Image 1 (spheres, rainbow, N blue to C red):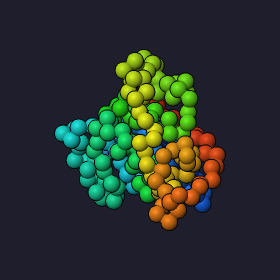
Image 2: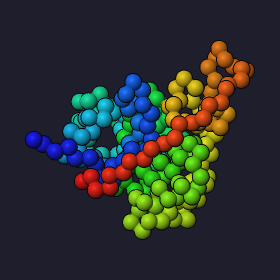
Image 3: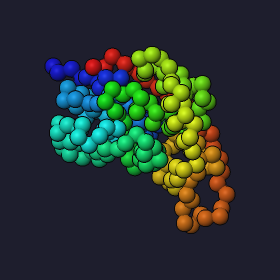
Image 4: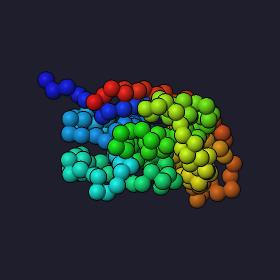
Length: 200
């Protein structure tokens, strides 16, 4: 029997449960290889975001996404606004976001996502550092995070993942028929992280 092998540094970033199944889940990890594909198939992915250059993308991954109707987005990690608009849109979830080793680029995206979830800086730095070799976040990485503006992420309430805080904390674009109306706030569900750093 073939073993299911998660990608290296695989983990669950955040999720919500609907009817007993994970519907709005964001996963993270390193670049998936052929031996990881059976595992990824079981996640029911709708989107894979590759934070790598175009010339780094392998034909195996392109073929896997095509065969399984997965939207494959190859993006620079600095396009953080566009990346987070995908990861916070429930229509694009479940999603797997990765770079080559699952550390800096992936960690930076996740760190910005945590600001949308109102994590404090200490918790964000702690999570980021767990995936790095030296267990620290550099000054450059902190500077990039400090420049991120959560208010730039605009989704309609109907499109936003349920694990996001409600308006007005997150800048959302109200539906046309509710323009000018107040929106009731609700407490955001807590996130649960599950790490499998030795998945390869």
